[in-house]
Length: 274
Image (cartoon, rainbow, N blue to C red; front, side, top):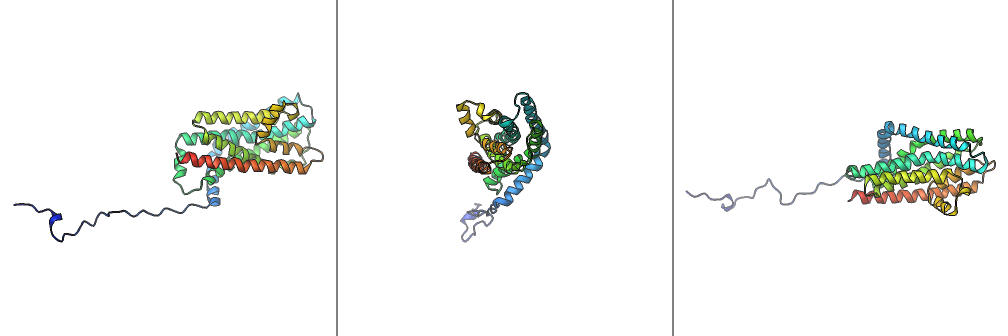
């Protein structure tokens, strides 16, 4: 007795359990920039709150220690203003530049970027949210350092409100630079090294008085994003500050911040698609 295949039976209907072409499920719409930025900011702030507070203490203690050491060398005047303003912005460089470069380098090496790449979150929201979270940690340390420096060098505190503009602008510029270094470095160790070198540059070029540096070092100082925040804060210690010059320094700092964050966003897209 022969067995007739089912396919050979006249009029047999094809199997209905399998489709020739599966319909692709529609993807969720991408989140808007502002809500996504706020979500990333809150997540980064809550995740790093416990881990970063000891490091913030170290950054503040380091900056105050530098001012105490230089107190025996610098008496007052323009050098004192440079020391206090440079040490205050150094707290921002330690957290926003150094630690953010290490964070993105570790995120890239450990495959953490794949997690963000699967979320409907704009790349700019990831970079800006992380940068804003790390820069937020610098506010208490920077204020404490500036007030301590004013007491040590007997500088006026009447215009310390300029910190309200220096902190976000210098923080954005340094955070964007740190994120770009961490994302562009081919290895995690190189990202850590670049972050350390950037913080050392902010220390040497920002704290030391500009008039005592060679011309070549002065040109390198002009390329550092934090320099213009340091200059704006230093001018505010004058008895009668030149507010036009302060505004110009803050404007340059803002432009550098936008540029560095744009480069960091491009670096994030480049690293996430590889």
